Image 1 (cartoon, helix red, strand yellow):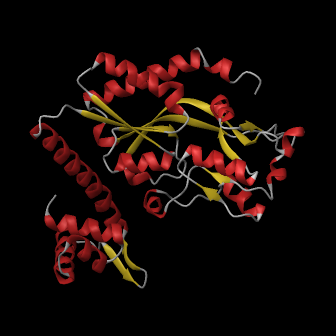
Image 2 (cartoon, helix red, strand yellow):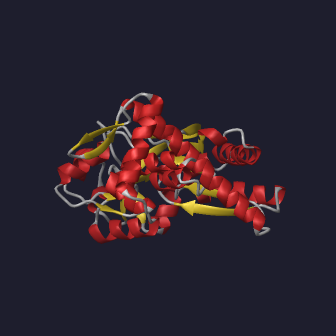
Length: 314
């Protein structure tokens, strides 16, 4: 990617010419001149200058979306060339939500290793936002997890649905609410342990959510929200605070091992899609297509065999 676009991209990401200049180790006037050259080239304004900093115009947003893809491709090419130069085999990175590794992704990786023994696999576990961030950074080839309802449309990621899950509200064994049926309102006053922390860095890939049910519950509770990208830490927080965590009922057996069990709620449970995210520009990559097919087949096998037994009684 040529120098002017690199500088434009840095300003768009940081919202500041001075911050971009510091990141790229160039002078502010250099960046100002190169952005002006781009605006003259396209004959449109790319930024609005206001007290909040450099804000993209609609024209600038179009260029930002395309340069983000170019930056990913450039980084990907650099890594692949370096691996080839060092004689390393192909490394496949997989982003995976905590629930899906033991249920069907582990089986897919095992099958892939048998079919393609020369390929190395690296698995990044975390929330759907964490794995999406890794995907957009080019650190993983795909991400398996919940559909992100407020994902910004310009990030360049495509979603393939695998199945839908029912969300459960899990508390520590022995919790007073386990003695009866309860409602969402009974959760007011309890700590909500958030397993999908929205770090500040994620804000640029999300739109504003107008209806976040769990944020409303947290606000009603009057208690601070605890959060962690680690499932073990979240489970520990639930036990420590006598709070609750929202997780797919598919994970009931695993969470029971950590001392957590689902509440019996009278409210209609939320149902969400689970699937695979890939980058738009890599959809036809043969290795990626094979990987998606392998994970999809493993997910289908899980749904048709073990899932009914796991969800029996819920």
